[in-house]
Image (tube, rainbow over all chains, first blue to last red; front, side):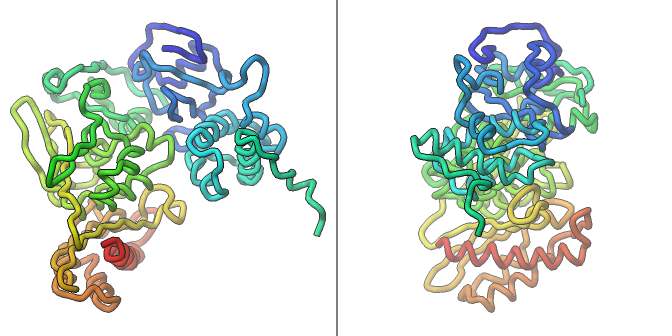
Length: 163
Length: 285
């Protein structure tokens, strides 16, 4: 398969999960394992352009596929707009859900670059965060959407005038 | 977290797949239901038959008087394909509310139906839309009506050597409408159904000529609420008629208490969601 633009190949057991292939064989540890049955989304990567939970896929199912992990988002040291949004709008605390959340957000914005708050919240339903309460994650994604559209992002909540 | 070791084949044709099936084999399409079970070691087949590389199974086809949804059609496609939106609106809605974005990218409608989870969304819609399941094996093909397909919790009417290769749904005609509504475990529409219902109605001359209602989440299996459908036929679809019919929501359903509700609560929710589904189906005509 191709991972972040690089051809890789290995012999694995059928039961090797894609997330374990990515983390243990390829040493790309940005993708995280957060739960036991595929509901938290910390393992989200893109397989053939679609956001997929890599903990609920066998590596062999991705044989021949094009895979993008969190490590593959930045180009030439330049952060992806979504990564920039999480930085500028404090979209993370512990950071454990963050790679999966960013991969889900990238897919969401590729489908719709101007989502409403409700569309964002539904679009990240497959990603759980225990720290932030999702508020700044939503703001980060709104920031990224604005950047992608070429609009001026809304100012951060903490810069808004006290009322 | 690791499944037990197993053998794996990815056949390139249905015939090859039929040949691989046997006692200890399990078909896998998207894997969204199978793989979590295997990871928790609740189910450990010796052989996984991955049908994901068989060409031609990912189609939604217009077959004249019905549409056909193939075994590899993902929930994301079912929820947005023009043919499904126009002819099986309840199923499109149910698919759009199945799991989450990532699950919908990989999971398949036929896979979800074959898995027959009591709290899944699409079985109720398949029942209400009058779907027919096409079960194929090396011995041939047979058709199973949706109302007879969900036998028990996680048990469909498929034999171990059969693959659900497609479902057929009669096209929605003039005067017909279908809808699906649910209460999800996380509140709203999110997560598995605590209680949900799908309804299909056919109106003629201002009265309900035919109706089907499917219910999931509240019982031991996804079921056709026959008494509700029967109670709607001949009525004018008024709010009173809907409420009267919805009172019969649990007449044909064997209720099952779970972490999300007592039998009493589930019975109440069934009536609420049956009424909502009927209202929305009538509005969709």
